[in-house]
Image (tube, rainbow, N blue to C red; front, side, top):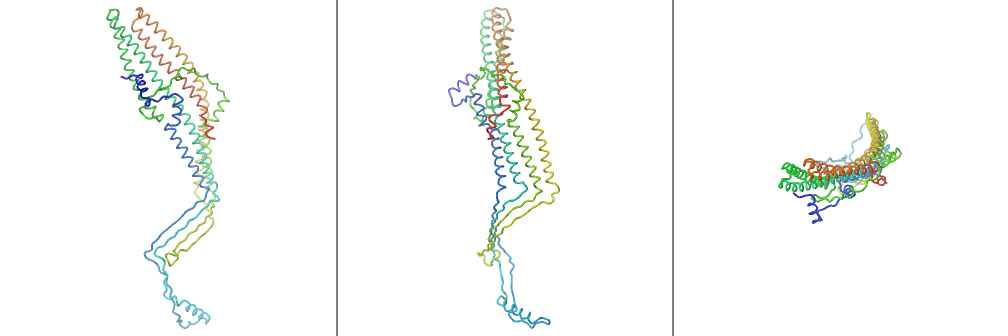
Length: 465
């Protein structure tokens, strides 16, 4: 079974397979390579394109149209006349009218039996332009809704980036806790193996009974199994951590644990004024405000449906539809204005507006509730930092006490003042205190980091500028 130390030795030989991580490094990697952050960036880009799309509503629309048509059975237009031979005027017809009819008959006589045919293939091409002049604020409010939605998405992205940093540190320190637990188990197993060898010699000399040797051997076997389980857990945790950070699988992690030995900062002071200042800059609360503004714009858009729409238009085109020759095109052009007004929609737009109004009220309640919850969370986190500091101090004292107790127990055992079972219990107790102190220190670090990112994200105000 390869131990964690051996794994790092192999990793140092093949430096390319080792990734050295620190709390600062994992935050940087998570904010730039995490799938969660990348997906959030795409959401921001999608909403940005929605704003640009809404802005095109202010611009004119230009359309082109081309059509081709072949006619199989054509209708023909025929002209015929009497050929200039007028019958005597019927009774009652004025002489002047008769002369006029005779004149028209003589004029149309050359067109007798003339057939006018349309082309077999007709072509039409045109383009038109339309410019909205008045839409009852629908285009403007649609643009405003998209813009506020974009603003909310940026705030949401800022909060995502902020919280992914905390998630990365939680992942990192979880990995460190597992490694430190493994180190404690390895140290204890080695201690028991040394004790077992010494006891075997003492048993061979008849100084102790076989039961002491057997009890120690059981402890060695138990810690070997625990070590194997921790090794497997660390391998699984390593794969998950690499995936979370967007790194390739198979890398060996070398964690910088120097922060564990440093002294934690003082507990931050929290006052009502500072909390209110923090609340004004928290990204998720700002995102809620923007979402409410977007809903307000959507409501105005719905009510704008009751106002008329006025648009100016113009067109220019050419067609051979009215020509006798297929290659002869007639040009046409037009300009005008169009007013469209929905006079009755059975209350659809009004109901849509009322639906949005309910959504606004629900969003406002959620925003107010979130603000109150975040306010309480700040005070809770401050207490959690203080609690973590005290727990760490107690765990450190317990560790030192357990170390002293083991030394005393070893001396008493050598003097045959206590049993082997008591010695083993003292060693196991020290192992538990080693793990507990590491976990308490990690909990203190994470409590401080959570408090730091809770009120204000990492430059959220700068991101919005």
